[in-house]
Length: 398
Image (cartoon, rainbow, N blue to C red; front, side, top):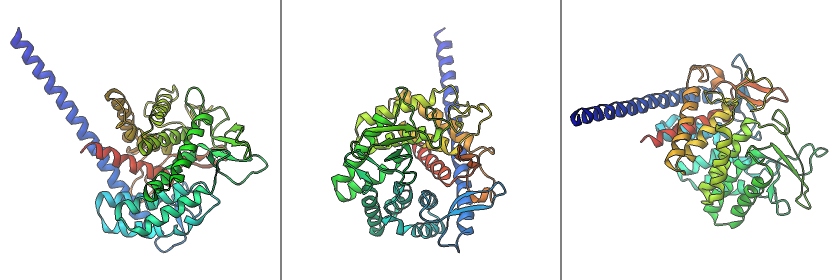
């Protein structure tokens, strides 16, 4: 009897070990496929604009025609970030050459005072450039960009102003996306020891916790403040289905933002907040089984509503990082979801065939549904967070 039990235990253990190995090998193949395709598409896209030094890739038409932007568009830094990440992984010099070229195209934006998106624009590009090369010229751009971003902060409100437009509608609007720009400020604090950068980042994160989130840890999109008293004047949406709905990419920004703020500050309040946001997202009854969210969790067209690959990529990247800060059970839960998301995004349904999709990596993202802009299209930031998620997952598998 004991011998039989021992033999059975050995057999079961062997089977479990085999399943674990098979699963790991399977994900290795997913990561390898995703990164190889990303390199193919990045080279294709970089070549297509090689002779257009004023242009950056933004999206593509249904027929694959490339849609571009100038350096001042909020997405201008994502493509160079993709190139830097892929160069760092492959060490292919052609990718580094392209990365330098596309990074240089946005250098002048370090002085821009009329945008809150400098973190997206300058840190997703120059942040990688400095981390990988150590070149002081990239560090200087990060510091100047952070000074420019800090100019949009008011102590009376405790937050960084987002938009300057629609002054008839808002006085001091702040959008959930703005959390993502705090990473550059924290990096500038470490590079300069200027405590103002850290103060602004923490203040913005704290006020956003208080005013941007509902009791269930879903977030609204826009909070408008009184610029003199700091009082909240209104709460609404601009890209979601309704003021009280949960715009999927907004939830993704919140999850990523507070995970990042915990990494940068080690303030456990941010960690707990990120875990609460994750719980809302992962347990939402409208989250599809393949874990690619609808463009809004409350979109009335569900289950026929458009999916948003960009939200899935951001969530996956955030969950992979968050999995390294929590206990074993939560870590497994987060990684299981991120694994499903990466498997889905790397399937033929979402991953573009070589030389198609305008050169972008992922298909099926949503930009601004209420304004009927960028619907079911590739988006440069979807590619950025997809590549980041692949590389983060790859680093965990080593």
